[in-house]
Image (tube, rainbow, N blue to C red; front, side, top):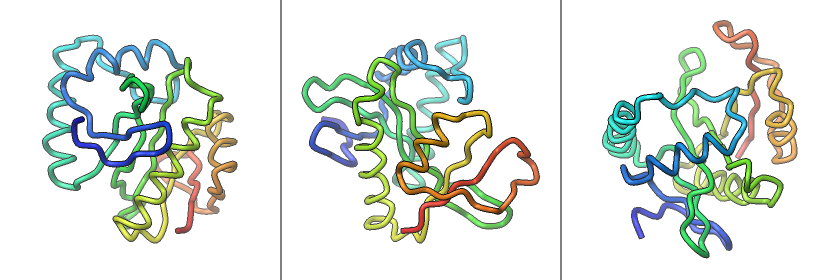
Length: 169
């Protein structure tokens, strides 16, 4: 299988490949995406973005947002991983996660996020991982708290509707 980064008991987290484009569109169709950056209506444009992401992000950092696939059949059910973001002048490892609406409430997000936090600690030796969550995104805020993230008192000047959550490793 292609560029596997993490395996759990039920999941494979691997780098995206251009052939995942149709699966990405399915994820968005099956899910509530109001707090996510939308995919382009132009699939060719989105394919170029995906190829660029694969080349530059995986190529430069060695990690990024990965395809979350069921181990039993390889079906793409989500997108989870880490990205480097700057909060002020400080570089941070930011967690991103999305599991298809069809596969929510089955423990897949918890399984993937636990594995990613382990990767951040062991492979990247990160001191912490952050999340930026819109104040109105109650399900994501609740999930972050369940996973052990705590709400930071730090405010994001350029994003007043976003709250910063922190997981200390």
